[in-house]
Image (cartoon, rainbow, N blue to C red; front, side, top):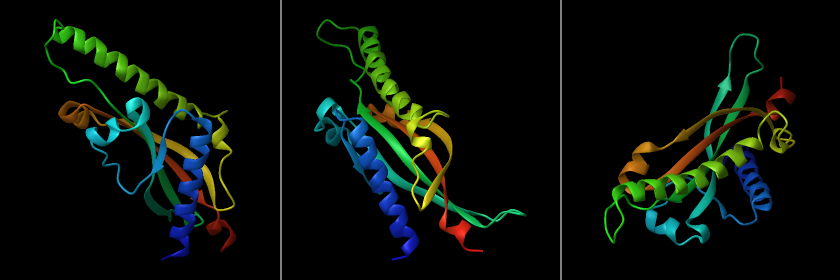
Length: 169
């Protein structure tokens, strides 16, 4: 296994541990693919969890660049929403309202995590001797997954520069 990958894996695990310490009432896990099913998520406390995974990596080889590796780490917020149905005296409108409230709670958790990487956020300083924070690249809500299985998945993509490349000409 490449020493670069070991460093990336260690960094991912450290990031997950830091998130767990900051969100004590949430479950934080690491994974390869964010493929949790609705049934799996339902087994977690609060029926939601935060997941950290290694994303892509690239090399900045543009003219004048130092050929630095850029890695992405993805932080996902997963939760389940009530199915949209009509029964027991509730209308579809009632369920839509309930789902909106459930989604608002998950959006709030996502926003709390994003704030950690805002310009004054604690995590902009997080790095290590191996990686330096570069940018928060995107936040994506998986609408297909929400529509098809009532699973909320918001994915935050973060980029870091490999500092080892700065030390090697």
